[in-house]
Length: 398
Ligand SMILES: *Cc1c(COP(=O)(O)O)cnc(C)c1O
Image (tube, rainbow, N blue to C red):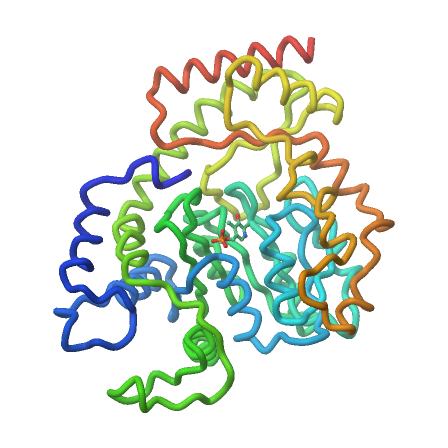
């Protein structure tokens, strides 16, 4: 991660194809486009790669989450369970549809703790939204079982873990719905873009209509299509889809590089006393987009993060202090600050995140360091990083 490291001729050729036809929109203009339907082609390719019946492309990962929630019938006042460690898109998409984000602790998988999820369920809960952060997954088996018991849906945010699997199924395909992002820093990128995958025909039809102003896409003439319900514009463009096509074809190549580089780093750290690793739930295989490990306490983790930076080991993250990824810094959510007026029902029912107890999350996230795994590193660079990282950690832990 990220896929832009390896842009090349394939991406260029795909984009040129679209420019040659002159049709940048994914719908209509049948006569002009010389048979170029990049978005449709990418949807078929995603369905095949993710072994699902339906894929719907949209303009971003955030819109994928929004559209997925609406498509599954989630709406005003419904409670959505999400983790304390994720990207801000999780609660943005929930609030965008008037639903209520219910933050829940993460465990040593760095994703939703199934026990904490069970405790957070109320009569208003409709869906559980685990986020497979940094290339590894939530305990999907446990979460699915909880969802089945309580009649809830399961939506996987697989934006950071494309290519990983759980019980042999591609991440994103295990729950009722799954979402991907193809923004500029993701494993597969097309500039801006996202996708929803599902085996549910109804959700797919809803997503297809909702993401294009409610158009039903029936008949020859776009102007004469009817609108079964209100929608918005969450469309992807042909240019973005074209880049995505080239990148998806290279996913396995990218995953192999991530795994190779990850394995060298991990093996070296395994010998250091005091370093433990993020737990991968039984049945799961990550995408190796990051290497995430724990240090004995938050103080050492903070020092390690600073020392790694000073030693020139870039792209290592201490999420506990991060502005985007951990609840402690989500001041706008905590203080309910919104540009437009939040619906009163949402405002009143948003939990008091100022006083909520997330000490379990703090325990794990406070001790964790995550290192991004790049695709383009040479063997020499990986060795150098490994040596520096080992030196820094051994120094701190002796
Ligand atoms: C990137 C990301 C998103 C949002 O994707 P965008 O395409 O940037 O809108 C959502 N969830 C997670 C976990 C992400 O990393």
